[in-house]
Image 1 (cartoon, helix red, strand yellow):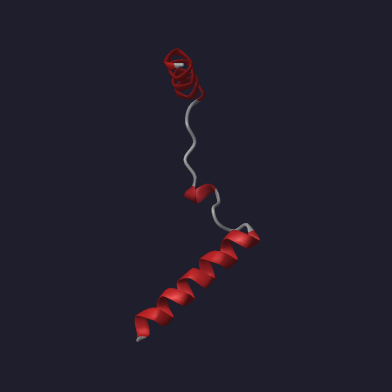
Image 2: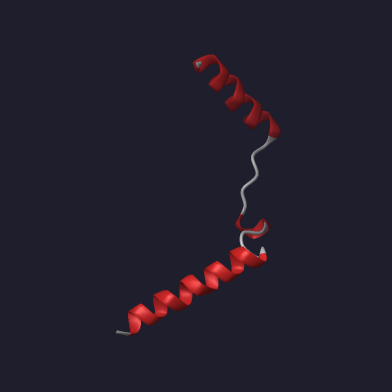
Length: 48
């Protein structure tokens, strides 16, 4: 079945990208604003 070979090929490429550090990069990242990060941290502290 071709799909099995395609899956193996895709997973091998993913594995290589992760191991070489080409994935994830800035294009695949989300950065939270410092203000929003602090609000979340403050909220979590109140929940304890």
